[in-house]
Length: 233
Image 1 (tube, helix red, strand yellow):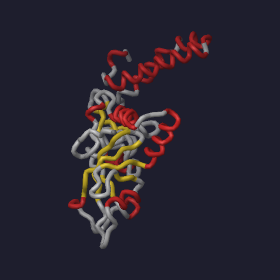
Image 2 (spheres, one colour; image 1 turned 120 degrees about the vertical axis):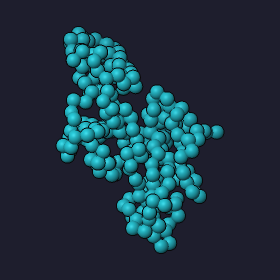
Image 3 (cartoon, one colour; image 1 turned 30 degrees about the vertical axis):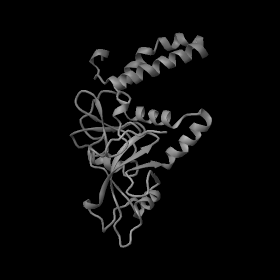
Image 4 (tube, one colour; image 1 turned 180 degrees about the horizontal axis):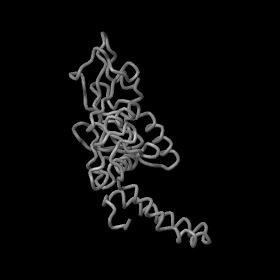
C-alpha cells in the first residue's frame, strides 16, 4: 500500500516519525555499523507502523459483531472490538485511552462518551441503594493523562463521606467537601519519584500529563467538570 493512501491522523503520524527520528539518531551514535542494515528495512518498518493506523476489519475481534469499532491504545495488541466488548473489558481499567475508527482514521474518544460508569463503595461494584440521581462528573488525574468520569456514589444507610469513598477506590480527593477532582495513588507515587530524580516541578509535570491527554491541544484538557485550568503557586 502506498504511503499517501494511509489515513491521515496528524497526531499519530507525528509521533511515529518523531520516534523513528530518535531511533535513527540512537543507532548512528551507538552502532554505526548497524545503520546500513536498518536502512534496507526502514520502508518495511514505516509501512508496518502506518498500517496500524488503518482498519482492515469490519467485525469485533471478541464477539464478531459488525458495527462501530474501537481500540485501546493501552491494551497490549490494541485489538479492535465493539463498544459493548470494550466497556466490559475495561471494567477495571478506567484510565485507558480509547480510539474509534471513523472510516478514515482512529480518533480519540473517552470512556465517558461511551457510557462508562464508575461505582464508589462495595469494591467498585454498584450500590443497590444508589440511582442516577446520585451521579457526579469527576475529574481524575492519572499517570496516563487527565480523565473525566461519571461516578455513582454509594447511598447505603449511613454511607461514608465522599472523600472516604474516593480513598477506598484508590483516589486521593483534591478537597474534602464535594470533591470534583482526584488523583490516583500511582500518579502521586510517580510524581514523587519524578520530582526527586528529575527535579520536575508540579507545573511541568501537569503540563506533561496534558500532552499525554491531548498532544495537539494540551491547553484544552479540562481539570474539573467546569474545565477550570489547574494552576500551581
